Image (cartoon, rainbow, N blue to C red):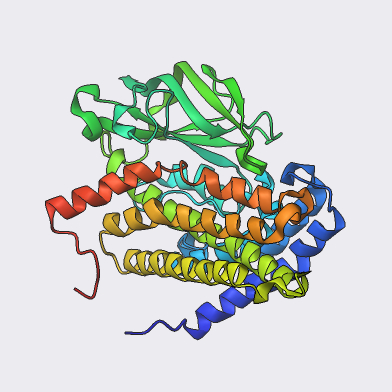
Length: 402
């Protein structure tokens, strides 16, 4: 049993931390009144994006032959945790895209045309892309999606509405973007009848029909409904085989859950560090507040929450890289880590007292970002259900040490 990072992993972690310290935190300090990442100068964000790519910290789990770094999810989580300590910077849509990667199956099932035109440019940061999973009537229950794709000759005709996709229009993303749309090609077959397609932004019959402004920040602030009305795409834009996308999409979402939750740890760790420093310097009732049991115990509880959350995330990432079926571990991560992280940030706000609600501490934005993750990529309740089914059905070890 070994919980020690390899020298290569430590170096990668340090490289990410150094970039955050050198490029990102000074930008936050330079714009103390910038409450949303979209308030930051785009030219500076793009410079940091170039630095991320130059440092080899982009597209971490994409195979090297396609322009990525060829690393595992453990490494991806290590980098994401460091990046998320500069939430104000990395939540900008132009920069967050360097962490997004195409689903793994596009490298094994995607055609050379698809890889050369869409996915390799996306890995290099030359094309922006997003996913169309959810619908107004199908959120966590993806099998309930109603969007359809009907084969007509050498094309597919897509109809339906997708929700919670980043708004290209609101964020000024260029027309080189594309979306990966999940739709039913055999509606009677349930989840076994779902396929995925590449749809270029601006294709006739595709439009942003409603922009939904959320209280999240950066790329999550303006999301949209995308309506597909007799949207015709070439059959060459079908990814893999017909009716085979659900399990691969589910695997991608499992991987994304780990990536997102690792980012939550970074933000919560920074909130914890801020609160600890504040408690060591703030005096009340004749002594530093960290000497008061009410404060010191909150910090102790937060330290345990952070440690437990890391164990859950990195164990699941290790199991993923080892080729295990990790649905039970992902359920543990997504079902419990968001609450742990929200508690850590909430305690930090409480330790700061009145200043905890001051915008300049950025604790409120950290809490809002963490709170979103209790819903994003499937609600925590859904993952409680998934874990319960794993227990009831058997066959899924709850621990590698059983």
